Image (cartoon, rainbow, N blue to C red; front, side, top):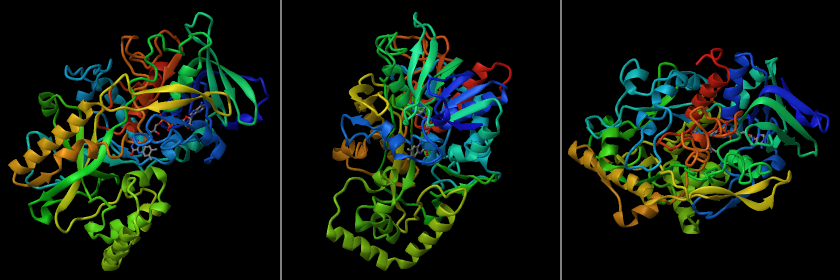
Length: 553
Ligand SMILES: Cc1cc2nc3c(=O)[nH]c(=O)nc-3n(C[C@H](O)[C@H](O)[C@H](O)COP(=O)(O)OP(=O)(O)OC[C@H]3O[C@@H](n4cnc5c(N)ncnc54)[C@H](O)[C@@H]3O)c2cc1C
């Protein structure tokens, strides 16, 4: 059932087998698996059914460098469904190399292997509504789909792995009815966890403090507690709870909040394909089970090891839309529609370039000279994106000149100086706000630079084209948009050693017997992959741990 915490008595004590804090992708997946296993679950959710400004303001905080990282109340949503209410739905699993200890990447190596998580990916894929767990062209399509570039057969760069797309599934919409109908689940909306209260010896959670914005305060007592409040908020709750462990819960070794990773992502360079246009396909191909999917270029694990670089993928992309020289009415339309596009999506499309009247005129000219393509695109967007339940994932524009930019997504190194801390300022419920000091390293830049070199070499070697980019401005171009917005990774990392990790291989906080974390916060390394599918898979694995033998994978 779903209730509202505002209707509870002040000072009430709520009880359950398991209390989950946060009803986003992680919390809802975990709750669904646990109620199926017969556990009694109390799911605390800060938000309501819709976005509410006062609740969203609880996410306010600071960033050390506004150019490098968006403010903490952007790129996350404090409401039922969490950030799945606005996510893009791009899904893919991590790769086996992501779990390995790589001698060239300090602090790499998960305490679990890919094979430990593999049994949970298929159900995770179903929950995100991305169809079958089939992430190669060979396994996903009955007949092989067209490669990105025919004839591009490289031993160092593959073009057979896929990204598949969720609806994108808003977990509140898709699973609200199931949660409402469950007799062994009580979900409380407007219930903000404000503190984790430990027993006097610090070895277990005694209870959670919970508050509403209308002034109600109550406690939750459970056998086990799971923080599923997102990769930034989990840190905030651990650090803000200092009454027993003076540095915050699980933070004896000052690890909580450190090693914060996003992804390094952007679009750069000019990739000119010298094969005929018919030999090039950079759009989506629907899988037989009705899911949008597309191939990407990926640097092979062997090449990553040889070059000592991180994981990296890339796709063909359109030219930078801010520059009217592209002459595309569609791109100019997107440029002029900036005010209708949300902050999260316009940031990467438009960047922070200053708008001039001359540029505006040139964009208008592009639209006037390209009316048929522009209208066809608008129709496509209305029918296949705006009105469709399964939405066309992104703007794909064929290039008449066979010329593209390279849209990349790459791994970041775990860096202790990249971190989340608390400020002296408090939110409306008295919880200290966060400060984000996101950093990147030379290795992060090197990964992209060397991967682009490999891609350029292989395009040349296979006679498929050429990739050109300006080496003198490459680091600035790579970091043009700073941290990739909504991926909050590594802040409560998983590991065997409490000196360099916060949770163990079961996602249990070291030294606290009944406190767990379900979030990308626990990823020790960031991979090239968008995180949500793996967040869900890890949540299902945690459900099995909390309810052994009863929870199906
Ligand atoms: C614009 C955008 C696009 C994205 N696109 C993709 C994509 O294509 N692919 C992908 O894999 N990922 C994507 N993501 C990331 C994805 O949304 C997150 O990885 C995912 O939502 C994280 O799930 P979560 O459950 O850990 O956290 P969240 O979804 O953030 O859920 C946390 C929940 O906890 C609640 N909460 C917070 N604090 C408290 C508290 N103190 N007490 C009680 N409840 C609390 C919140 O209200 C929220 O419901 C995108 C994100 C954004 C913003």
